[in-house]
Image (tube, rainbow, N blue to C red; front, side, top):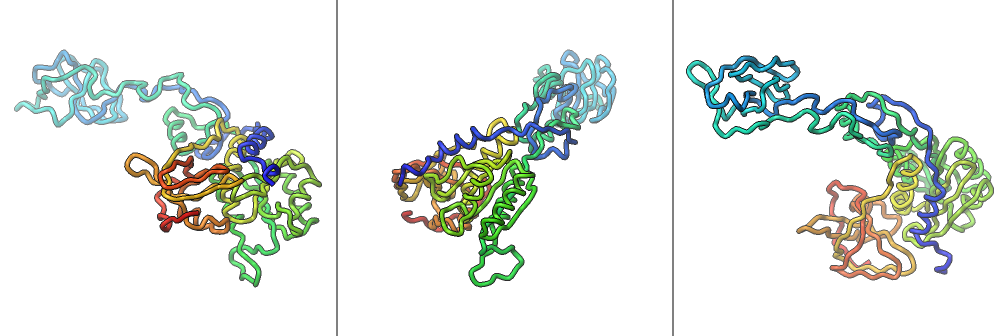
Length: 410
């Protein structure tokens, strides 16, 4: 019945209300801080650039000296400290080199000519400051360069290096334990027996978590056994901030995760009005959060996008886990009834708008759809869309992807 299915937005709000921030911090060398969340604001102790410098190869001079041939009194390359510019002369200068004291402009080398005595003749249309990058143009000493709560990527590392930061204080990585449940699962590399399938969810989740900056501290592949599920959950709770399980959260006779979690801790929600992924469970075991995702691989993939991303962001101290939601025009027909549906679509920027093409097979076992598409479109309950209508979506991969096969009504 619909009254037993919790709306996704309500479930996510409840999850985040239960999610604390991991407050433990550590100081790391800059090159080891990639993927960590910054724990303290960073202020610049220097100007960037530290001194006025030349934007190109050319000649530095005083505007007041323009109009007469100028002898070259010094040569300044990047990394050299220039002397003051002698009045009535110019300095040969190269890109990035510090401007000599007294000079107030740089003429690009292609714009000058030379006398027979090798003096420099500059053009008439000069202005003070041209081709000079002033000290502090990018960053001024005392500026707040990065605020706490930012997840550091390669851009942030480069920016911090530019102001001389060698060590940063960051929140420690969130520790996550993964449990895969099911008698049918075997690891890649083993020979499949009748009734068995390869465990794709472990690799999907672990790669996703590592990309999100989390530390996967343990993995357990648990058969359909209540006692073994209890043991695996108990061990995971001893070392993880977050436990993520796949499979075993439905109501079948071999689904043991839900009763095992309730025996060790509690569940705050179960069964959501979403497709794929209705039997999502969330609760707590001791001090560890628990998130149970369905076993079908696309359900795991969608659950990671919809729930793991914001929960992990808050746990890790990230200031915002909000995804960038966009709007696009669909080229397909689809209907959602009692559950909010997450459609795998290929989003393309065409003629100044986003066009969404749906993967033709939206079954929760078709993991190729996650590769053939680059976005999830949200189809609210009791909604029908036809070609030309608009849907909200978010990109999970902004790289070019193979287009899905021609879409049809879903």
